[in-house]
Image 1 (cartoon, rainbow, N blue to C red):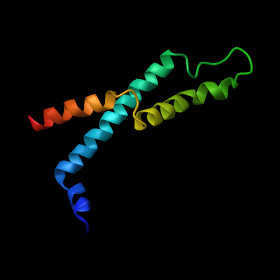
Image 2 (image 1 turned 120 degrees about the vertical axis):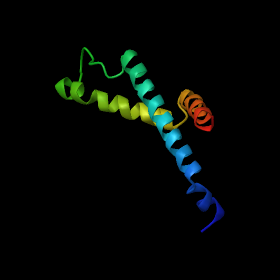
Image 3 (image 1 turned 45 degrees about the horizontal axis):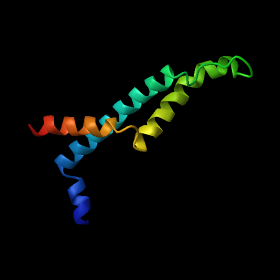
Image 4 (image 1 turned 90 degrees about the vertical axis):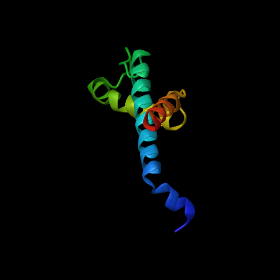
Length: 90
């Protein structure tokens, strides 16, 4: 087992990973709400997908928001992560 593998299994590293995942998920939720407010997923007036599009547009928005957050998003997850780490250390 390498040193980096051992370091990744320490309780502090596990807690850090959980906090990072939570901060990314929070940013994804925020981005999903922003995308909804911007009108993404709203039914079009012509050539829309009908009832199926209405039913599944929220899933599409959530997945797009999660991908955006995982790719760096708007930087909100990093701010949230740093704030949570300060609280955990203090």
